[in-house]
Length: 38
Image (tube, rainbow, N blue to C red):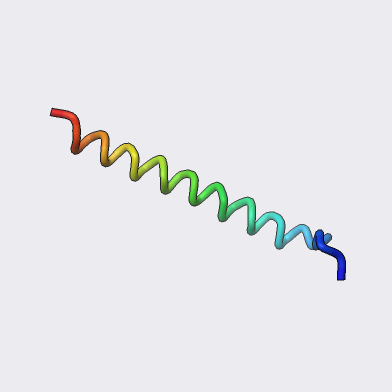
């Protein structure tokens, strides 16, 4: 079995998951900044 899976759907799903996690972290940072600001 090759280490890199040539399945484009799996790669697209992984990229979407990483993008979703980045967006979620950005939203959490925004909420924390909004609460911490006086």
